[in-house]
Image (tube, rainbow, N blue to C red; front, top):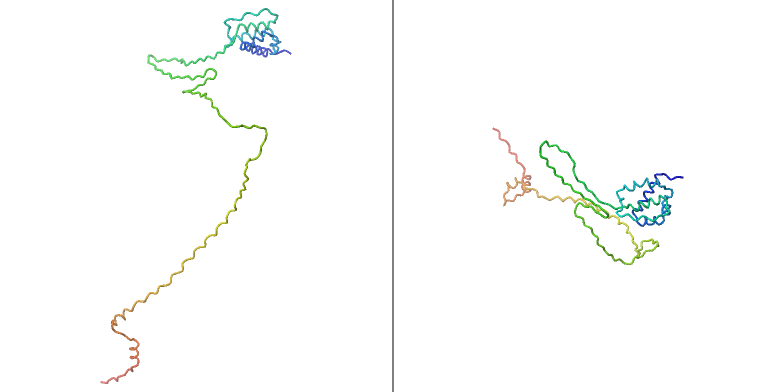
Length: 238
């Protein structure tokens, strides 16, 4: 079973970059290259595979040439693949370049036909570059103070406790609702008032005919008139 070319190329690129980034890994590879290739499943890689991935690795922006290459290793009996990888590790290295370039230039063409042109550019750039960087539009404050908190004993166990943990036993009884009070009887209507005894007015005619000092006995006068016989006088003839 052959390994796909894409898989071998990707594995070689990742392996060689790890050697360029980690000096300890590069030293381990120089000590025992066959074991390192075996651990990364690269025993089947050939010289053509290493030659194919070399331009990809060298053209990366984080891979640069060493200013003082290491001394060439002593002659050994390693394979061409191992020797080519060692030469790349000795000639190149990686840099952690995190430079930031901000370009706020304006490219434009203006035809004014001889007139004046005034342009105002109010541009601001807020950049957070590097590990732990913080971008703030205005003033930023970082509080790195420490606070010590003193607490009491802490008990941690694997027991499960169930219950409310109340020490007091309180019997609460709810009284029955009181019966509503009977409605008040309607007030009886007041009794009608007794008629007032109003004296009859005096007879005006009697008061005019009798004086204040005179006494008039109506019964005696009427009796006298009734007892006297009426005498009839004979009419005289002419």
